[in-house]
Image 1: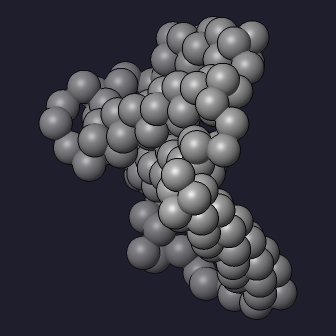
Image 2: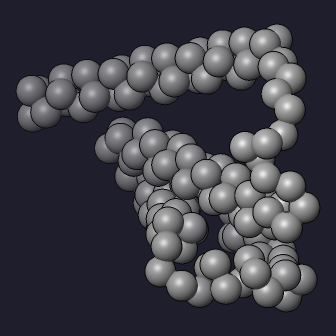
Length: 139
């Protein structure tokens, strides 16, 4: 996991060097993009910390916490990516004026995957919490 974190950091630095000035300025002023990027980084670091701690403390619910924090980090970074895309494409066209061609099959696949994934996460969380409560009742 440490190697992946180092590689992601190197990719981030390489990306920052190649970004256009308009996007760099959007990150440097106080706005939603800056907050979302910082939130994604904080959620990611907290998730890595929880995952590392969970290796030493089995049965404490830390793996489930790490998964929840990773989901929060991914959500922040997805919205950040969309905002960067809008800033990057603004000189060429406005998304409000772009023709709409709905792709319902892709949306259905996304919605189904999202519901199944969140349902699975809910089941795992419920099982972890019930086992923690059962352990605390025995103690």
